[in-house]
Length: 500
Image 1 (cartoon, rainbow, N blue to C red):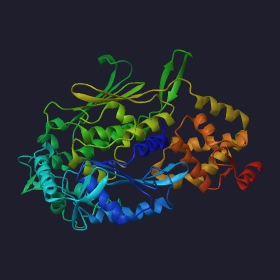
Image 2: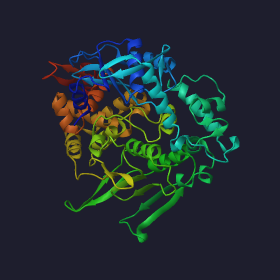
Image 3: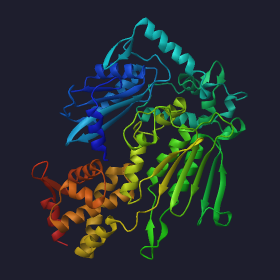
Image 4: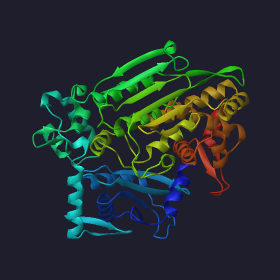
C-alpha cells in the first residue's frame, strides 16, 4: 500500500481524540491542538482537509512548514519533538503535524494548558491538570530518568553535547538558546538535582559501558551460512549511542554491491542494500532498545543475502507488527533518548520510519523487510533481491532502444541538474531511477503516472516526487487530465537530445 493510500485511510477514520482536521493554516489553533495532543496520547493534525474529510489541499505547503516550525518550537513549553511533513494526495498538498504523548506533561501554550476531550480541544480543568502532574511524577521513575551513580561532568563528551545544541538550532527543533552545557542537560531532564541520568550516559558519556555495560552492540558478518567457519567479522562496538551509530554508518556505507547466486537462472545477481533503510533500522534499534536489563543487547548479523537487526525489548502494548507497515502513532520506549536523537536530525517523521524502510527496499528491487517480535526482542530482517526484477528487464530494454551517446547525454543532463538539488535527500539509486524514467519517456513518447509506478515498482508518492523534480528542472511536462494525462519530455529538452 502506497503512502497516498495510507493517508487517505487515515483521513477516512474521521476526527477523533488523536486526529484533527484543519482546512487552513492557523498557527494559534494548530499550537493549541498540538498542546492538547501532547497532554493526552499524542496524535496528528492534517491541514488541507474539511471536518467531513474532504481533501481540499493548501498552497505553498513547503514555505508554510518552514515558517510554522519555529513558531511551534518557541511557543509550546516544555520543548517537544514535533514532526511536520508535506504530503501529496490527489495532486493536492497537505501538511501533517505529528506528536507523541508527551513525557513532560503538562504542556503549555500561550499560558494555558489544553486537553483533548473526544475530538475537541479545550482548556484543562484543575482535575485534569492534577492527573497530568501525577502522570509526569510516575514517568520520572522510568529507567532512563533514574540517576546514574558515580558519573561526573568529566565523564561526558562535552564537544558532542555542544554539537547537539548547535544542530538542534540548525534544524529548528529546539527553543533552547544558551550554549551552557549543564543548562542544556537540565532543560531536557538529563541533569537532575546535581546528578546525571541514565539517558544522559547512553547519549553523551565518553565511556558509557563503564556505567551501563549493556550498551554494547555486537556486529557479525558471515561469508556464507551461520557457522564459525564462515565468520569473517565479529566485534563488539563500545561508546555512546551517537559514536556507535557513526561506526555502524561507516560499516553500512562500506558494504557496497553484494552478489548472490540465483539457482533458478544459474547466475550470480548483484544488488545493494539501501543505505538509508539500514541506517533507519539501526537508529531505531539504538533508540528503542530496552537498556534497563543487564542482559539486554543489540546484535547486527550480516549474511550474503540478509541484514538482520535484533534489539532486546518489545513493542509498546498498543502497537503490533502489522502496524509498522502503515502510518502509526509513535510511542518511544525511551522518550528522553528519542528526543535528543530527534534534535540531532537523525529521525524525521515520527511513526514514518518503518514505512520509509519499506519504500527504500522496494525502490531498490529487494523483498519487503520483515519484522518479528519474540518473547525478548524485536527483529528486523532486510532481505536480498526478488530475482531478476522487472526494473532490470526494463533498463535493459531501454538501453537497447537508445544509442550510447543519447544514454550518456541524458545521464549527464540529469546528474548535473538534479544532484545538487536533491543533495543528501536522495541516494545514487534515486538519481539512476530519474535517468531511467527520462529514457523510458523518451523511448515511448510519454507515460502516465500509473504506468511509471508499475514500470519502476515504486509507490505513488515516490513517483510523484520524481516527476516533480523532473518538472522543476525543465525535463518533463504533464499534458492532459489528472486521471488520463501523461508525462512527456519538454520540447526544449527533446531538441537537446535530437542534436546528439
